[in-house]
Amino acid sequence: MQSGEIDLAAAIAAMLEVGVFTVLARPYHTTRGSKMTSLVELIHRLHDGVFGMIERLTDGWFLGLFSRLVFAATLYVYYLNSAKTKIGDGPLGVFEVRDGAYIQIAGKAFEAAGYHVSALPLPVHILVYAGTYGEIILPVLFILGLFARVGAVGMIVFIIVQTHVDGTEHGVDLGTLFNGRPGDILDQRLFWCLPLVYVAIRGPGMVSLDSFLSRWWQGRAAGQPPA
Image (cartoon, rainbow, N blue to C red):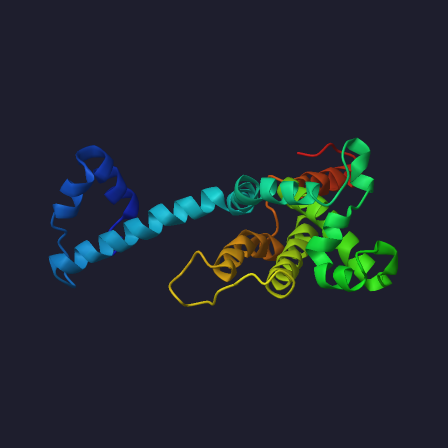
């Protein structure tokens, strides 16, 4: 080790032996700078060492898993309950799209058609069915990490359309950004998109069905079970 450099391992060992405050208060002699410079260098090395270790320990699995757990804990039940208002009752009710779905998703078009589903044009039916079943399927894919990027992108699109419908069809005050009111709809929907954007870009991580199936497929191709 050259003069003026501080050995990070030795510094951490000293911290464990005598305590962090004792180490930070200990003068480190150097031929290139003052004791203050040595202290700053020590703090910088400790910062990089500690957070570098955390980054290495969590790399590849934590943020993808955490993003999906946050979505599951905060939004899954919300979307599940919302989907239940659009479909029929019972196990087979999932195959029945109620009028409530048309009212919620395409209320103005449904009203203009005299509340007759048969009088609606095909694009409205596609929109309603896509919104209803997307609300059921996409959150599950995202949370399980199965085709997670597809689920994430689909949910981002869903939230954008949902927000547009809330403002145009239901007259909801969406609020504005940068106004100091984080409870506004637009602010909340941006927060909703944050874990989705992460998974869409970086993937769901190793703790996911996507990762397991990928390892299984690679192991199958190599004639070995997944790790």
